[in-house]
Length: 140
Image (cartoon, rainbow, N blue to C red):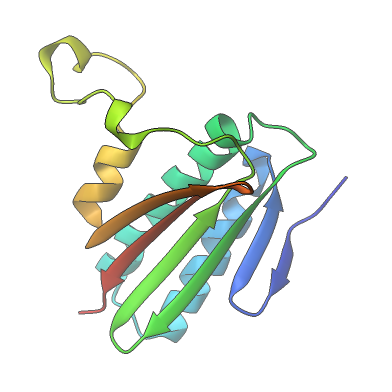
């Protein structure tokens, strides 16, 4: 079975939720090294966990043959994290509004909404290799 691989500021994991804790430890460790406060770390950790879970389940369809790559970068006081899957992509405009009356009781569909509320920016892009979501957050 494949295992997580760390190379500098990037961790690559197989498409399995059993590696979510590895990603969390990796991201939180780097953020603490950057001097991020605990509130910022929590916001980023929640966002990354949600996006990696989506990449595993929705993007890669939990295929053990596919990976999810998470890269973190700092530029001044701005943190950028990119989550890249090997899936077919999606149209973010087609995501149901979780605040609409007909969606309030749905158990799914809140991830991107939560991430957008916690991060300064969320950019979604696709190419032949999968979907990349880049989130940014300023350090306090």
